[in-house]
Every structure is written in C-alpha cells, then in structure tokens.
Image 1 (spheres, rainbow, N blue to C red):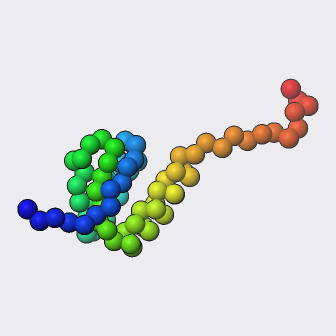
Image 2 (image 1 turned 45 degrees about the vertical axis):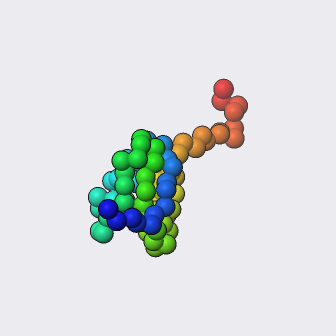
Image 3 (image 1 turned 180 degrees about the vertical axis):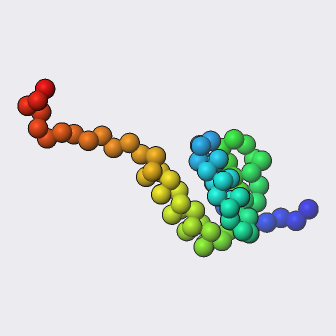
Length: 77
C-alpha cells in the first residue's frame, strides 16, 4: 500500500456531494479517499486544486443563499 499526502476536508453531506460532482468533471481526480465517513474527504495536496475548490464552493454557497429583501416603503401594509 502506498501512502499519499493530502488534505482532510470536513464538510456537511450536501457539500460532500457537490465536491464529488466536481471531482467527476475534473481530470485528474482530486479526491484521494471519499470512504472515510459521511462528512470527510481526503483531497490532493495541490495548491491549484485547493484554490479551484475554494472558488467553486464560494460560488455554490452564493447560489444557494437566501437574501431577504426589505421593502423601504411599508405604507402599503
């Protein structure tokens, strides 16, 4: 068995699924081991991959964020 250097990522289940989806589209694969448990992944220790993932996670979080809009004129109530 060969050992590989990696970064342990702790995440919730939806984020783990998103990372698995990105991994399927990205060549070469960046996930080393996804069988740790439901909330952890081991990814490659590549700075470019880490920057890519941070950017994609930010975009994903922004697209799934609810922002309440407050009406300035409440006279209509």
